[in-house]
Length: 292
Image (cartoon, rainbow, N blue to C red):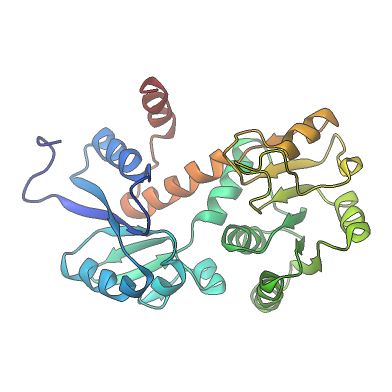
């Protein structure tokens, strides 16, 4: 590293809290070195109340850009100069690019999900999706799929404050992407859920159900909804194969997609925004696996 850091080196960063567990520094620094770029990436523990100061510091120190994680995503969206279409609808950012002092905010989570589908031969254009959940990741997926040409999206969430959030998102999408029909329903309506999945192309779990330490849980109570041509995708990546995915496999679903790829590809999209280059994903995966 000492051979790479010099007086001209530009800094990129991760802002949020906690960040000490993040794999982003390793991934980005490997990629910068691979491409011979004079950049370095560090993580800073930033509270939500410090988001504005962090944005000002990024301008002052001329950071090329920075990623944003919880709890700063929504607050940081208020601190930048411009928002991408997805970030504007969502009201949150996870990637900020410094373009000559102007901070441009992006949300790459949904793009990472869509790219992960493409890597498995699945397109969202013209498709009907059923998405379980209305939290941050779910909202990003709903918005990006609509922007990228999905025909219809049915959002199911528990009867909690996030259900109202989903209705707000649906209203924004009706205005911004009128070609996509968005419906919001309560997860308690199990018969309706079964009906919607029956005519869907893609089923997405964008909740935390099935994540460790609750890996024995599944958001799908009636496994008869699974059928061979239904694409089943999970955003959970720990465990890599969730109970929902296992049940979908047992039911004969041909395309089942885990959540690890979404995490990887959202970072790759941010990398391209920073550098204009494709992240060396295969090379980094090989490097990462060799270190295990």
